[in-house]
Length: 228
Length: 287
Image (tube, rainbow over all chains, first blue to last red):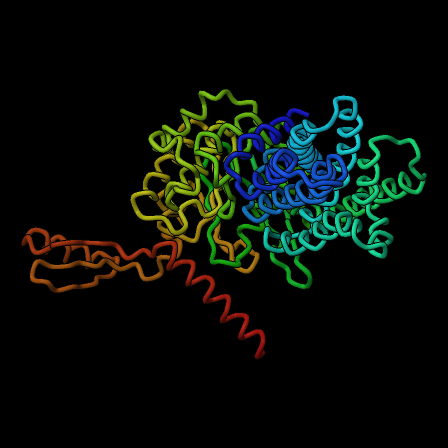
C-alpha cells in the first residue's frame, strides 16, 4: 500500500507537467462549464451538454490517461526501475488506476456543478463506475503496448467508439441499437433519467458484461505481457 | 557477497551464458569485461533477479536470488545502462520518488545530489540534463540508498573523460565505504583503474579471471623492455641479464628518455584470448 501511495504522489506531481494527459483531464469539464453557461437553444433538453460531455469524458480521459501513463513508463524504462526498487506490479497499477480515477472524479465533480444537488450523488456514482471500466480498458492497452506510439494507435479507435457512439446514437436509430452494447451508451441512458427507476435490466447487464470484459482483458494482457 | 555456480542461460536456441562460476567477496570492485553481446547485461540481470535462468545456482547476500526479500533488495543499488528517469520532473523530485519507496529521508537526496555534483541543478527537469549529468543523476539515485551491493552496467558508456573521472571517483568512494561493486564495462582502461578483480566474458563463458595486473602479467609472453632514447631512437631489449647491463649503461650515459616494460594491457589480453578461441573454433570446424 505504501508504494501505491508513492505512485499516486508521483503522478500528482507530474499532472501539471504532463500536458498531454492534463488536456484530457481538463477538456470536457471546461467545455461543459462553458457550453452550459454560454449556449442556450430553445427546446434543447435540460443539461444537454453536461450529460453528453460526461459520457464522452468517461470514454476518453481515463482510457487515454491510463494507457499513456503506463506505456510512457515502459518506453522510458522508468517502470523497470520501479520494479527493481521492489514496487510490485499490482502496487504500480493500482497507484495509476486510483490516481486516474481520482482526477476524473474531480473532473466529474466540476461537471456536476450544473446539476441539481439531489442528482449529484447519483451522477457521481454512475460516473465512478464508468471511469473504473475505462481505466481497466486503458490499463489493458498500456500493458499491451510497448511504447506510447503503439498505445495511441490502439487506444484511438476504442476511445472514438466508446465516446462518440452515444452521441451519434441520438441522431440515428441503427447506431443507437449498435451502441447499446457499450457501457458508455447505457450510462448515457442512466444520466438522461438521473434515476435507476424505469431502467431496463439489460442496461445493468450490459454495464456488468463490459466491466467483466475489461477486467478479463486486463488480466489476460497482464498475464501475457506483465509489465516488461 | 555474490556467488554463481555453473550458471546457464539460453534465449531460444542460443546459449548466452554457459556454466558461469563466480565468487565476489565483500568490499571489492569486481569488473565483468567483454564486448557487446558477450552476456554481461544478461548476467547482471540474472544476479539482480530480473531474469530467470535455466540451470545453476546464484546467491546474493547469502541467499538464493529468488529468495531475496524486499528488505534485501533495499540494500542493492542497480544502475543499468538503459534505465530511465522521469523526464518532466526535476532532479530532486526524481530522487524523492525513490527516497519515498526506499524509506530514505529527503536529506539523503540533497546529499546524493551534492555527491554527484548536481546540487546546482536540483530544480532542473531531467529532460534538460546532458548525458553526463543524467548518468550522475542515475548514480545519485542508487547512491542515495547507501547500498551494500552496487551493480553498475556500463556506467561511463559514451561519457566525456571529465565526467568519467568524476564517476570513477564516486565508485571508489563507495568502495571506501565498504560497498561491494559489480561493474560491467567494455572499457578496459576503466577496469584496470577501478577493479580489484576482473573476469573476461566472451560468448557466454568466463575465459580469464584475476586481478587486472595479474592478468596482464600472466599474458606477458614477449617479456621485452621498450626504451625511447634521447636521440629519438626506440630500442627493445629482452628480459635478461644482458639487457640489465645495457640499461645500466644507457642510464649512466643519460641517454634514456622513457622506459617501459612490454606487458600487455587488458584489451590486448582480451584480443589474444578471444582470437585464440576463434582460431580453435575454426580448427575444430575444419578438423
